[in-house]
Structure formats: C-alpha cells, structure tokens
Image (tube, rainbow, N blue to C red; front, side, top):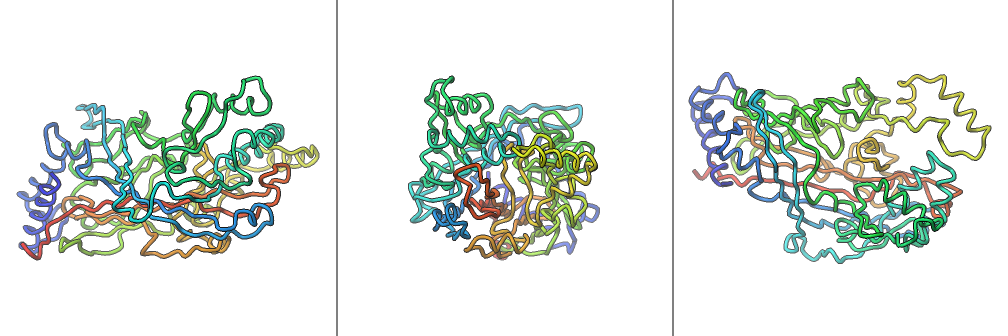
Length: 482
C-alpha cells in the first residue's frame, strides 16, 4: 500500500512538471484535480481510509536522555548540573485510529487514537533498554513543587514519606532506560491506609494519580511514556474531504468540543486549528502556514513555509517551527494566554502569615492579564501543567530558540537548527507529508525549598530530562530515474 501511495504522488508530480504548471488549485488541470481529490478523500472502502485507520509503516520514536554526571554536587552543594546526552533509544511507533464513526451530515469521521511502541534493537545499535541513566526524580520533584504552592502541611507530610515510598538518596533517580520510559519505576505503597505519613500519601495517589502512574495492586509504577501505549479515551472528529478535499483531516472537535477549556476562557489559545500532522489537504502551493493540533500540549502549532526542496527528486515544500511558537508572552502577545497563573496567592503555602497577607493584598489589585504577565515563562518554553496536570515545561531540544540563560544553566547543551528544529516536508499537489521530524524536550524547574530535605541545597534552574523526536519518511520513487 505504501508503494502505491508513493506511485500516485510521483505520477501527479510528473504530469504537472511535464505541463509546466505550478501546484496551485486553480491552475491544476481538472483531470489531475479529480485524480487527487479522489485519492485523498476518506471514503469508505478507499485506500486513503485504510491508511487513515492504520499507518502502513511505523514512525520512529527517538529518545535522548540527559544523564546527570554530578548528582551529589547538584543536590548537596548547589552545583551546576553536568549533563551527557544518551541516545537515541529508538522505538517503532504504530498509530491507529479505532472505533471509527462516520457523520454524513457534516462530512466528518470521529475516532479514538491508539499508539503502540516497540523497542527497535537494530536501529538503537549498542544502546539497550537495560542501560542505566541518572535523571531528575520527576515524581518527587513534581509532587514537591505542587504541594509547595498549595499546602505547607502537605509538603511536610510528603517530606517524611519520601524515604518510605522511594529508594532515592537525593532528588535524582538512577534507573534503567526501559523502566524510566515505559515499564515503570517502582513506588512502594504497601502501607495500611491509616498509617502515617506514607499511608496518607498513597491514599491520595489512589484517589488522583497522574496518567504517568500505573497502579499495580497497592503499589504504583511511574514512567514517562507508558501511558501512551494503548487507546486514548479522547475522541477526535475530522473532515473526511469528500465535499472539500482541501479540508481533509482538519480537526473539528476534540472530546466533543469545538474549542478547548484548558487555557483562559475566551482566548485564542483554546482554538483547535489544523490537522493532527499526519495528513494535510491537497494543493498546498502558495500556503505560508501549516497548522497542527497536538493533544499532548493541548494547543495548535503553526509551522511556517521556509523553502522548496526535494526528497529523492520529488519536489516538496518545507515548513518549520519558528521563534513565535514558544516565544514568551511578555514579548509575543498571542502567547500571553499560555502564561499559567499560579494558584491564588491566599492558597500558597507560607508559614509566615504576614507574608501571606501581603501576597493576598498584591493579588487583589491585579487584573487577570497582569497575573498572566507575571507568570510568563522565558522565551523557548511553555508550561504543560494545565494540559497534563504535572509541572512539566515544554521546550525545543537543548533549548533551541530559547533564552541564553536556559542553555547556560547546565553544562553540556549545544542547540543546533539542523538537529533540533521541527520540520515537515509536504508534496504540494497531494498534500502528503513525505518527511517529518517533530522534536520537543521535557523539563522541570529544580527549585530550592528549604523545608523539603531533598531540595534544601540544590542549584536552581530549568532542568532538562529528555528530548524526543518523531521521525516519518515516506519511501518514494526517484523521479530522476523514471
């Protein structure tokens, strides 16, 4: 099926090249127009729908981990972290769309996304899931940061419970790559519910554990991506492209809603624009922006046209992420609504009642917009807390396009456009993405909290955990040899 897909892409390109035409919709001959529109529409029984149901070949999911060389010095002496990049650890990623429902009244189809990840030993080379790595301890740090905002008492209870739940000696976690990414790091919760403090913490986990925690009897396992293996419960609805081929794949609703409720109400940050990035409408020549919606970040991304290039002789248009996408809301107004307002000042943990009262007075005199501005992150970063519920910060790999201070905090980062930029190359007539490289990094703020043993003496900064790259490349026939 993949070869037949490639063949008609090449055929359409050859016809247009021979006729000296550009791929603008209105300049394409009606014969080619009809052929393309017939091929891309998600009609029942069509090859396009079968490709839509399940990708005929896997994407490759590359993971690069930031191994911490000096965990004791960072946690006990406030030293700058020294990082070594380990990877790539490569997984075959299969995507399916299951439980399809067709809606003829508005030419749409809805589905549940399903993903499956399998470690690829051959492509990973000498790297194995049994490799050991030391990274920031996300479960301890994430819980401490959330409790520090809302409950001084809760933070104290968690501080006493940590040695019972985890084997960590400091704020860093040493484990295997496989456990960290998918199979899970053990969290001991085999305590009676009425025991204190561990039982109280575990009871809280059982009531509202994040998606990254997998329950196993009384205990839990934490992993970065284990929850991505399987079927999502978030139904997505998209255009089928029968009435308008150029709208194929454009998302009309997520979880039954045409807009999000993740960000501040009434702001453009809640708009759902574009496709999911795996298919686009045809006749893209002249397009300057390629919108993509991603559930992982609860937002739409906008790739901008950069240049015409080719893939094995087939002309493609390259689109890439630019500085605007993760620009600070302080400098780029459209991103202001992504600035996450901290919990109400009067709810923040502070044993000093006088200081708490001062915060309440300051907050009372601020507008929502002023609170947003105060909470904006540096250039090149974005909080995923409203989307995931965890205090994770999104960036590009090695803080590419980020503020210099982000790059300078750890030792070992070297941002480069060719290695760390997100790109999509599409064949302009059919709209098929022939090559795509989506690259993002996950980070957490390492913050000194004197009343929490594991954070009392740490250095402070935005700490990289890992970066990942989704790579897809459609095999096409070299036109030059046809």
